[in-house]
Length: 97
Ligand code: HEC
Image (tube, rainbow, N blue to C red; front, side):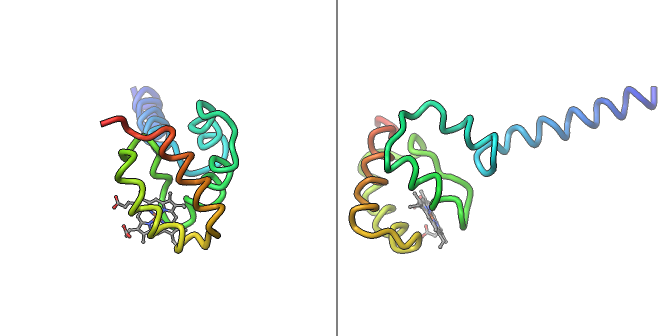
């Protein structure tokens, strides 16, 4: 019985980890696999999880991304061209309201 308890505990730990998908390594690669490659996607992956977990494109609407990117481009130190490609990437896959 003790062993069963340990297995159950390990499974709880495992599922807690897998729910926390979008921050690192393999998990992030899986989360991003569904988007076609683009400059904006690459920049997003490189720059947008330094301070917080990724806020994935489909968590915000097309309109909502505009003011957010105005703030975050500055934080992530993107130049105008980089900002435009990240905005295009998130809007392409944004929540359709
Ligand atoms: C230097 C740190 C930093 C970087 C880099 C950064 N962010 Fe943020 N982000 C924050 C902070 C702090 C907040 C919470 C305060 C706020 O909303 O301005 C935030 C909030 C957000 C939110 C929620 C805002 C809302 O109103 O719903 C989104 C979405 C977001 N960031 C996306 C991004 C994207 C996309 C990038 C890459 C271009 C990025 N962040 C890069 C610090 C950062």
